[in-house]
Structures are given as structure tokens and as C-alpha cells.
Length: 352
Image 1: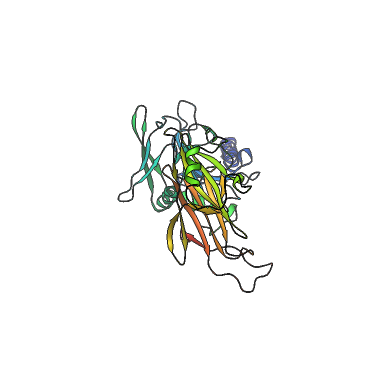
Image 2 (image 1 turned 120 degrees about the vertical axis):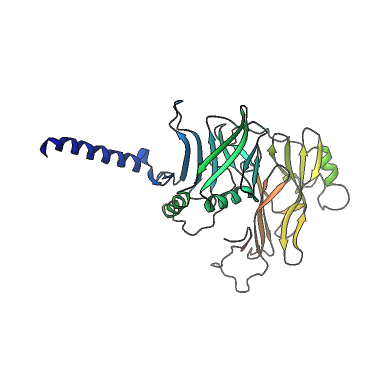
């Protein structure tokens, strides 16, 4: 047996070095779960699970295609992204996730947008949340899109994804939290920057806003000067114009400006109340615009303590502002104190 001892030691060393490399490369903690690689960066808290098509191709790239499900430790939703190396989706391509009768469609640049690099695409909106549900329930994911060379079909294995996400939950101390998705990465900007809206409100919007007696504020009002805007896509901007106010709330009306057609339309938002149920309104209370995520949020206080009321988040979906989350608390606390829970129950999407 002695002649084989050096070979045995060498093999054991090689296995040891391989395990160390896969466990802690570049400060990352990595674990393989079947066809998925889960990794966490202790320095930042970011974790992700990845699956590959044709890893280590002759081109020298990591893989021809990379499907990734990741999450910042401080975030409450997952990011789903596709990195394309071998081919690129066309600028107007629809990405289709086949699974009859619930086929999902994503379009560039609204619900399938590149952040950071031009080939790192993120799935956005409520359809991305449904996509994550579909991925966790199946063993494979088939998607198609239009490339310059023709229709491209990608087939990713999903074996190991659930285990990878559970492992990430443990690493980030988020076991049991809801599986939400559909937002772009916080640390990256859109790969193609959007032109900022004009510093002046387009006249057609002003005409619509001041038509009739719907608003208390005039154009010269100090309150009206706090209007806001943000770019939604290369051709459209959102304007939120103050209209009236109460003791704790500022009501603003929403308008979409189409730069190509030079026209304005009223933006409606889905919201809920016990008295009216789900309705559509053209205003938000205490609106907050986030140009990075192309979302607008609201926080309507029913009284100054802020222990009852509603709040929501709407995200640009190409055709309008899509409701992503809504929280509602109709009952004000009778025994309010400084330690009271001011979190409103989430009613959309329903808790999982």
C-alpha cells in the first residue's frame, strides 16, 4: 500500500482545496443545491441563487445564460434576473414564460428592464411575483424571446431552487417571510438612463388640473409649488400636482405626460376602503415618488397619531401605475401609547 500513499494524500488535498474554494471564494459562503448555487456575501448581506445554461463556454464567459434569484438582507422582496450572454433580446421583445393556462408575458423596457449592465435584465411588476410562485412550484422554467438571430428558447432547471431560497432565508434571518418579487435592484441604476422631466409643468396638464373647482390650491399657492415629477420610460413622465390638504394629509392628483404625442392623461390608482371597496381614484394622499424604482407610494392618515388609515405602492407597468402593495387599517386604536403597533395589515397581495 505504501506506493499509493503519496497519490492518496494528493487526492485528499485536491478534494480539500476544492471544498474550501467552493465554500469561501472571495469572502462568499456558497452551497450547491442540485442544479442551483446559493451564495451570500457577509460583507454586504446580499444573497442569491443562480442556475446556468452552458457554463464555461469557449467564449470565456461564466455561462451563456444565468438565471438569478437574489435579495438584499434589508429588503423585503426578491429580485429575479436573467443575464444573457450568447444572445440579446431585441428592444421590443416580449419574454414569454410558457405554462398554460397561466402563461406570463414581460416586455422591454417596462416589465423586463436592464439594470447595471445592458444584458442584466430584471423581471418587474406583479407578473414577477407570479413568476416566482411558478418557479417554486415546478421543476423547469421555459422562456422564449426574440433575438436578432430569431426566436430564442431557454430551458432552466429549477431543481434546488426552493432549498437554495430556504438556505438564504436562514442566512439572512428571514425564515417564514412572504415570497414577494418584482422590483429592480437597489444598488443598480437602469442601464439606459431616462431623460429627466422638464422643470416646467406641461401646459396641457395645468389646463386639466385647474379645470373646474376640484382643487383648493391655485397656481400661485405655496402648497402647489411642491409638485413633483419623475420619468417612467423614454416617452412618458408622471406628474403629481398638489390639490388640497387637511390636518395631516396632502392630496395630489396624478397625470401622465406623453412626450412624443405631446398630450396628457389622468392617472388613476387602485385603492380600497370599507365603504367603497376596491375603487379607482385620480389622486394619492401624501404621495412619495421614487424615480429609481419608478414607484409612487401613499400614506393616508385617518388621524394624526397615524394608527389607522391606508398606504400603498404603485409601480409603472407600461400602461399605467400598477398596484403592488396595499395596507389598510380602518379601526383607530382606543388605547394608543408610544409602544403601539402602527403597522397596517396588508390586504394586497393577500398574505401567503
